[in-house]
Image (cartoon, rainbow, N blue to C red):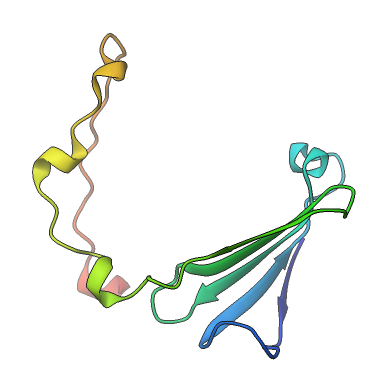
Length: 105
């Protein structure tokens, strides 16, 4: 289940705070009671993730303060997408994406 909660003191600025609780019987219930995502409204990426383990005794927080225009959608060389040698011997299928039309974005 996902719940959007209002901003609170201490939340990262300009974020939507989503509380996600695994559904009963889902494999995630073995590890997590809840996951909080603080998603940037500008970049649509998490700036903070808070994970509460299934027994509620451990909470882990991961902050990503460096996410910004200067480090997303940067020019990457084609070699950045080369598969590592560990994938040698596996069957690879490449499917080109269709360009996104101007009407959809």
